[in-house]
Picture 1 (cartoon, rainbow, N blue to C red):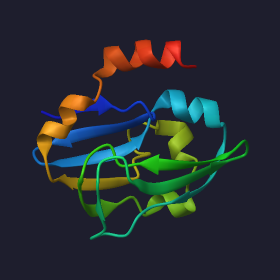
Picture 2: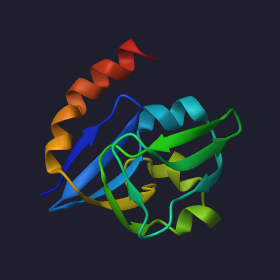
Picture 3: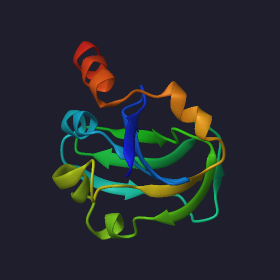
Picture 4: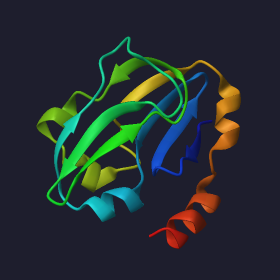
Length: 125
């Protein structure tokens, strides 16, 4: 069964085994408004925790997406190039950006669970 964690930068990671799908939270996509462009990383790219991994542009702003964990990108969501609005429609599901093979699963301990993130987002909205 997969579990979801959230970062203070409003990214989520849904981990299944040693691979996690990464995207932005519903809270973040609501703040951004209509998403018009997404740039995902290349498969094989290696990130450290907190590294800039992707870019999202909306009608309001452009933002960086940071990798919530260290690891290697093993898959990207190619459909976002043609359908960036998937992020608005399903930010925490079909709107994922990339999947990363975790280099160190203990890094997940620094992230928030869904309840802690809801409180964080409410306080930092």
